[in-house]
Length: 415
Image (tube, rainbow, N blue to C red; front, side):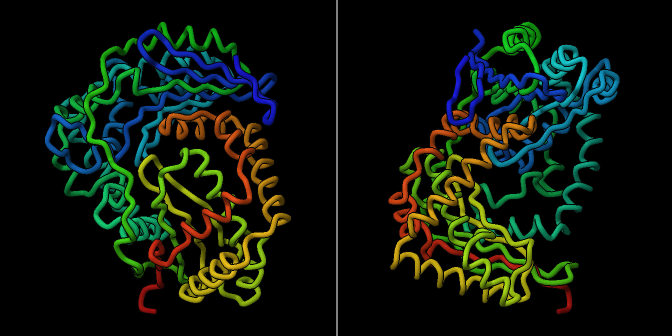
């Protein structure tokens, strides 16, 4: 059991003989419990020995893992009082349940589900219609199109510019043989982790996991995605959809992967907030000028080989927002960020991170993402604590360059 002084939290971490990493965060007297199995396999991953698969295999597999030859998995969890779900992003797939009671029974079910794929010609074909509807729904979702159009501008035809679910055309090429190949290539214990948070006995939870998660085998050779260090492929993308006022996403692409990943993330999140967070002078100016509203946000999002600082929200004048942010970057690069502002925002982010440990789903979800980077929640806390003003100022001058910048806009139809 490890203890972190900054967080005031404990974490039990170990590794099972089959290679599965286990992270348990005991939360005494919490009513809710959550367990997650996460796989380092997302929409951008490929097996080296197999021809390039159709887009959307990881997401398609996530859907089909709920199939079972003998039971309805959703009904089985529901009978145990659990809410079960899953998600796929660019780098991971995760399966999780949340419950109050019957934790052990639900954990056994989740271990069985993730460890026992059941793909048939019939159930694969049936799923294509369901996923096609999901793809079409996201095609008209302004927030998703805003984000994916920004990805296209930042990364061109790179893997993170492809929709996670693939296309209606690409999923027609998926069959059970492809699913089984990719399942056995990536769903190996050494490529997975078990994560749990709640009022549970850590050693007992790991024991149940070990007894019921029977997978063995080596991870398949994957095609590594090298860090994308090139300038942006385009500086503007636009689409018209059913929105009442325009929406913008202004991204600054990360091209420096030399720093430790969690250190880079902590510095970048603090810097984005300093620059245009809701307590910044720039946010106040833009709000008073009427070019942003309370939907505007500043953040940094990344994976092992990509990342971007993104400013997004509704705005009648997206180009003016870009102009003002670049102006603030120029001003702060010349003057340097002041220590009082830096210390205030750093304390805010550390406080938010500590407060996040009050939410069971926040703990499990963030640990799943950190596992894909080879890190854990305690190491990430240390990264926040160790951020320096010099590192933030250096990051500002190297990261916030116009050659790293792209603007994505969604405008009202027939505007």
